Image (cartoon, rainbow, N blue to C red; front, side, top):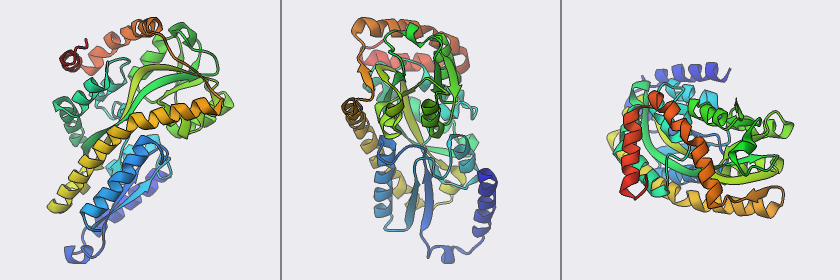
Length: 337
């Protein structure tokens, strides 16, 4: 129903474009920015910062309407809504682009692919990241930036110290071939669910566990229905801020430039606060007393890395050997292999 309504909105939007520019110029340009997480997460706070910067830079010519917490569209709906023009801007997790047909983005789901934040940022903020964003354009999407939300940890209602402890657990994942392979490699049973459905599924026992950065776990209250959290840091969770290409190309040049600058500043902010917000969330989870936090020692970390190493080899033909080589080359610059 939502997508049908979105189509109607898109048709109406197309009709509006026939109105003379002089008339339309009297009203602010509205950008609907939809996302699926809470307002007090790194992505939510970065979206708010972008709104403030964009509206100030354009002196009110642009109005940013924020729709957090899946209030406008859920995971499975939002990309289609963007392509239809029913919403202008999104910040979906990078796992969303694999099902869209751009398999290279699935490299971000590969466990332990980024040995450090320095390597990660050299990829997302450098030529590799720019080339990936360009691959969105044939889909009617412009990629504006990568936003960080840190590394994921495993949670469940039983202690998870070693990979073997995952065996038989039903674990919520995003729709990703790589994440499916990751969980099956660990002996877990992957369950694809929208982010908004994760808490109810954990609460009801439909799934046993999940993987999230602490900020997502805490703001969605998942820690209230997960007794154990293990700081595996095994996988990355980031976002691409994207906009409908037809809408973006149709903006006045000066407005597009102002929004680009606002996005650049919001991106610096997003990537600065991500670690801070996750640290705060982890402290809050610990303080709640509802979830026991387990910190892996170095030997256990190596066991996790070794257990998940086969994932890269299995998905390499799908994602591309050259992309893996490029990321490993970036890692080598920082002394990581």
